[in-house]
Amino acid sequence: MTRSITFSLALRALVGACAIACGSLQDISLEPPAASDGVGFEPGGMGGPDGLFAFHLPVPDGRQLLCTQGAGGSFSHQGRSTRHDLDFDTRNDADEEVFAPASGRAHVHATAGFGTHVNVDVGGGRYVVVGHLKQAFVRGGDWVAAGQLIGYEGCTGVCTGDHVHVGVHEGDAARPAEEGVSVPSAFYVRGSDGRLAAVSGSEAVCGIPGGARYVSALPTPLWHPDGTLLKQPHRSDVYVLENGRLRVFLTEAAFLTRGHSFDDVVLMSADERQCHPVGAAVEGAGAPPAVEEPFREGALVKERGRSDVYVVSGGAALPVFNEEAYRLMGFAHRHVHELPEGEVRRRFQNVGSCVADIGCIKGEYVTRCGGLPRVDWPADPSPVDPQPQPEPEPEPDPEPEPHPEPEPEPEPQPEPEPNPEPDPDPQPEPSDPRVLRVHWDAPIGSVPDRITLSGEHRRADGSYAFRWLELMTVRGTAFPGFNVPDVRPGDTFRFSLEFQRGTFVSWSCVGPFPQQPTLHGRASATVDGTSVPLSVTGDPAGSTGCGLTAAVP
Image (cartoon, one colour):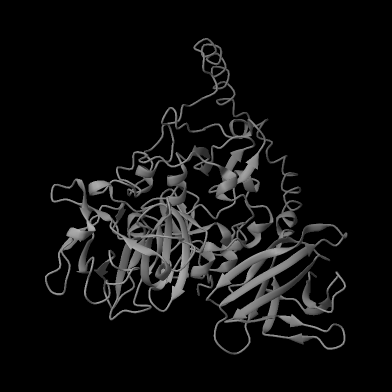
């Protein structure tokens, strides 16, 4: 069976339909990251020699990097924006993963000098630059944790071969690294005794030949809780974790009919891929989830007025220890469902506690194969006092009585064969929530630098599932398609795509409407795989602009 899921790298950073009601990390207000949350490493800080800011080598713990050019290097480290920076060699024949060397807010740039680079704002007017990337997996403004997957190394900008350029700059991280000032810094390494150490950048031994190899001490994510949707950056396969095993969706229908959203997919590294055994593939159309969205496996929930965020996993609510652990798992872009106060304990029999260290997702668990230790939940967590325990004891006594009483009289379960009669009723119900998928191919030419989708979903009765808003933005990649969930007969989805190449900006439909609308690119729509027609419609606001509308049959 052909695998048809195509989930581009850029989708990692998209809001998609989540833009309708998503909470951002600022809305979640998790506990601020501590200097160390028990992960056993520094997320980057003033821990270097002589009070220098120290960053991590941007590769997983235990990997070695050869320093090819150090501070003041004669080849290209003489300028104000490179003087104290370091170059580390990477392979020219493969895409190697690069991880955030420090925690902070990421800003992505593409320039002639540093090429594609990520500036991680660490506060105090400083940022750590990671330069010459082939591709960045984060977007400007994303919060990242030290150890989070952020891109592929490469040779963009001024370079003679694949390598990764790292350094600490003073200046505005939102501006390209060429505008910053390179300052003395240090980097963490794993010493020969296995312990964490810091090396001053000015004392690093670098060169070709003669450069030293330094061992990274950076823990990276190797585990996610059950229910998480995962993919590798260079592949289109999407997996779900069940009982610690990766199950691949063989088709897009297998993914969508089970109620999943591409907005919830997070990236996993090649190392994490090796940590998870492989389970049976997921194929064929599936039944919609038996529980409502906030309580299904893999969902993120929090209670109104509280900062604790829980992952629904294994039927339990597992709290996330702090913001650092939350970001390490790549959850910063995901939607968090807000519940009424007290709802978590009302809905889940098993609720973890970071105070009691039970079922608490910490950074140290995220960064090791196997992850969170198994939790032996109490058989009945509700009775806390010892007194109620003897009371339930007599209850189990009568319970075994009905058990051995498999009287054929109660077993007129065949009589409840009328139950199968209601079953066909619910069967059409799950088939009711259908998915409208919109696709658009850009006009002939290079892939647009940016594509932004805006739209609104109007119900057949005139109400709105959501009014006109910006739904999705992708950069440097083809439009991946967009899903409008829970569409019903008579619903309409009106939309427009804005695309940009350099300084040129245009739209999928350009007026004047109705005199002479012009379509740019090729748009199409399907409902559950069946094509539906698109019509050109005017702007309800009264302008001469136009858009496209898909009507659900």
